[in-house]
Image (cartoon, rainbow, N blue to C red):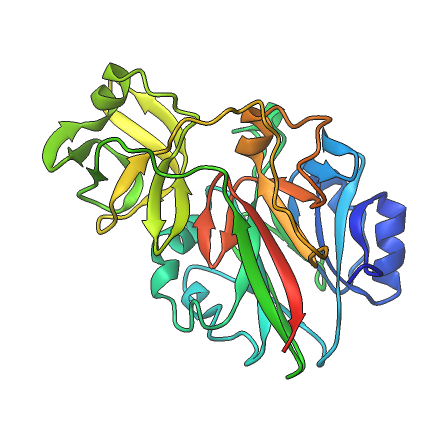
Length: 327
């Protein structure tokens, strides 16, 4: 895959690839995406990246990933809340689906809460990210995704590229998470959602905001669930002690046990170690902020720093990467 584009480019360089008919996944500032011609691409808004020389925020560059066409042309389409549950089912029998979802949209909420029950989930690979905005524009500028075939920008629907592979190849999705469960209290929640008022702490009904404040919890550390040995994070967005509410960047589930993450040194810049560069990867904006990644590298992997990562499920504070392997 080393001959394929997977790095930062100018608008003109990206436009040339589009004009040549390449299939692409793009990440960048909205103004740059609006300057691109129609073609075989999907995109999302985010101006934060891990480049070859380190992390950076740029409104002048796009991160461009070229998608190889080896078993027929990929299909590009939108999904809304009425048909998002079919996203894996619609994917190729052998291949993968690239998905970009606008942050804080109905599709974001639905995917986060319901993806585990989607038909063919965990059978057909789906990987991608949550589009966002520059933090200076947070709450003022809506995150958007783009269907490049139509040059259609959307703040509510997800955009997907279904990519078929030959029988001789398969897609492999991996995650790298520096965070793991601590040895503290067992935490369970009575309802699935992006916020919580109450929590069962070691089985005792507790005001969760008061619990975190009483322990002076470092809210950079997420809640962590153990899914068969894989640590899955739910990052804390904020604690409102007056309202007695804790907000999250991904949902907590009512049938999952969580613990606060074990303390880590956020001064370390860590990333996955790979023998061969993958087709595509992304990392989390929270890792960019909490670990001070501007100007620092996290190994060989590059890509957008996003408002959420998708490796089947919605993830937080996690590096995700997609490789194409030979069967």
